[in-house]
Image (cartoon, rainbow, N blue to C red; front, side):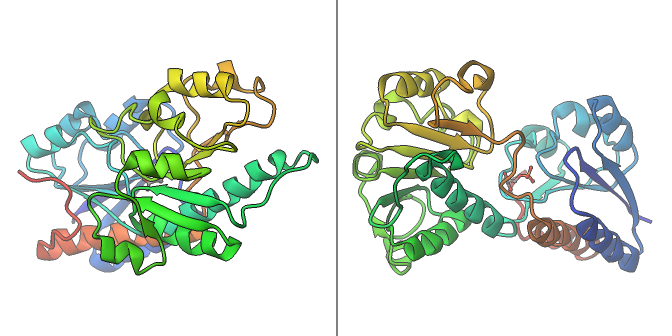
Length: 308
Ligand code: 3PG
């Protein structure tokens, strides 16, 4: 009987866990649940004899993968898989997958809410501004920004996007204007929403040179990854540009240093919150479970993100 671990330091909603267990029960698999663990040794112990695992932002490091002697597949219930050591997975021919699109609506709604929150002086009572008529720049155009564009258009925002991996036709079909490069995106838009993954090319790529191109009343919304921001540049922008605002659900390393220092211009949620809805948990969790069943029973590798 295949054994599947659900390892979630930040647990899924109960309904998602129940749904995942039901899928594995019906497949004849055993489910092991490790939630809210506080030390990686708990994860290392839990993976020892499992065939498959579902994770969220949990770190599937080389050490964890090395300890999982029977592991055949890891599914990241979510979009970004920068938390999986793919080289370690490749070495053992372990399939890594994500569940693209499954939690995107939750993240898009959060990003939209974050724009309103910042435009309205963090709901502290001061006069703010409206989103209507403002320009929103979508830095990358995957599932989340596509959904965010639909919401933002409802606010009366003009949407622009830059994504070299998505065809111009697909973007313009959504009523979103395509710009030729990041320079144009950042120069044009008062609001920028980040949707790039964290990888060697993108880490620290949101730097002073780029951010300082933004027009007056600039706000950056980061529901992507904290690593993509160059934090010295962020501090410099907040210090040198009194109109600049930054909001994120993944607090930068320098959070303690800057929190409370810039009035209503900086905010980070206490924990990562984009995908933190029961709907997103159910969509991503159940998709992950079905992908594991599909792979272990029928060898289906759709959504595999590694090659070996
Ligand atoms: C993702 O990559 O899917 C999001 O960042 C959500 O991450 P989470 O499952 O840790 O909330």
